[in-house]
Length: 93
Image 1 (tube, helix red, strand yellow):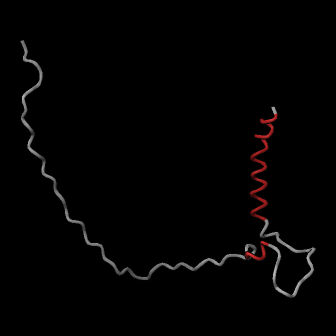
Image 2 (cartoon, rainbow, N blue to C red):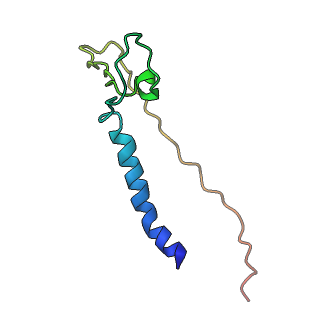
Image 3 (cartoon, rainbow, N blue to C red):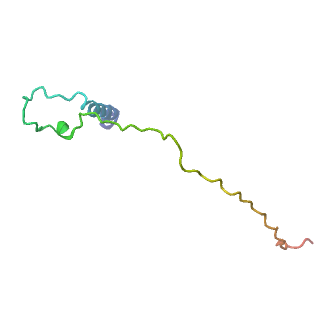
């Protein structure tokens, strides 16, 4: 009985933890910390820069194609001549 209740709550706990981890850099503040002028931070999020947005590189499509791919040569397969073997069945009486 105790395990069923835990198993029902496990997805809710996992969802809550995922939402908390995803929202933490967005909602990150230091309201109780006095402003320091040294610039060094004791906060792990601020020290690693996880709260700053990541600049994505601009990807541009090429204007012209330089390499040409040659056509593959046509390959024709010749069928082998059928083998004429004696039957392995016993002779008909």
